[in-house]
Length: 418
Length: 104
Image (tube, rainbow over all chains, first blue to last red):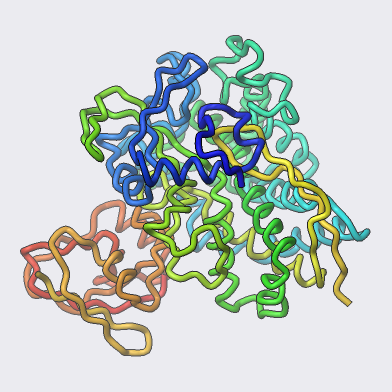
């Protein structure tokens, strides 16, 4: 954890030093609706950092709109229209698309994937755990969601590596390890109409179009085919909606689960008692569900989503003006002492655990939350079947991003299970 | 005030007095009702707060279009009285409501 209480939340570099916990705590305690100036030309924003406030604003999309952008970045109308996904819409427009997509990501539908996730998790763990030391983020946390996403969407296995590289270029567009077009360091104007203002966006658009054409020609038994079918009202996704959804799935479907798994393994490697609590527990023991919720609460990979006020709104004595950017720091909410007892500690039996890592409570709650939970649970089960001990062997490295929080490298020494 | 009673899977009951505007999922979580997890936080996006309404004294509006669609997608055999309790709000039109926690 980064103990600087005055860290610059607008700077991508801040987050390479670890989660700025002390800054969020200061804001929650002293200025829960703080005006933050942006140093990169942005017009500034309100930082909302307390759990209850985030929850309140998140469920008022008629006042706090997603339809003018969901990240700090200022977008022109032209950029917005070209790049928007259903994330960048408000109800009722949002509801229409969300419900089309929900068919493929419902709890009931995702539960059917457990055997498949387990098969992939076994393979990924067996491959990764051949020596006695491994970078578990690169070899486990990054591999599993990528392979699973390919299977869910219905893209060929051999395209998985290419897709995850492209996904990283998009969502990690501020980290030079993942892209040559670092958003705050080189001119990306040429790509302003592409997802995440990235040249990888065009490659993904082209790939998505190919997948779409193939499925319109021959229906396949996969999610992409399902999404191309009309719903009960005869409503279908447009080509641009499909392409933008595909880009979103490749970006968001990969890295947030990766960083949830990475954070889980970070704690397992540093707190041996967690391994003792979990190892040997039956796969259907409820402790796995509470443990996964707790690891995801702590990981909270999506640092924030931004909204734009459509009318004036008073909060903690401040007036948020219509047109102002309002940033809901979900990660901070997950560490709010007003909601969680000793939030800085991992308690794998914490219940209830109404965290907000998935943006719960608002219309944009994560579409993939059931898939993420299932992947984290099954992967941890298969990992702990194979190791008796885990110990961090080198300092972890953090992603350079003020949007996605994650450990991108974690080298672990382990003893294999007898 | 409205009297809300949850019947849990083992038949035991949790009874609470609720203020107008509160939804039943929050009441259930705040009062430790077994079987209500509210995994989507009340976004009407899952059925982990699925209940059946046993009786109401007063007027309770039916499920909205989205709630009905989610019930249809997430619950194996939704019943006529099935509701997502994150969408059931206490109001002055309701004196009391009894619900049974269901699988979701």
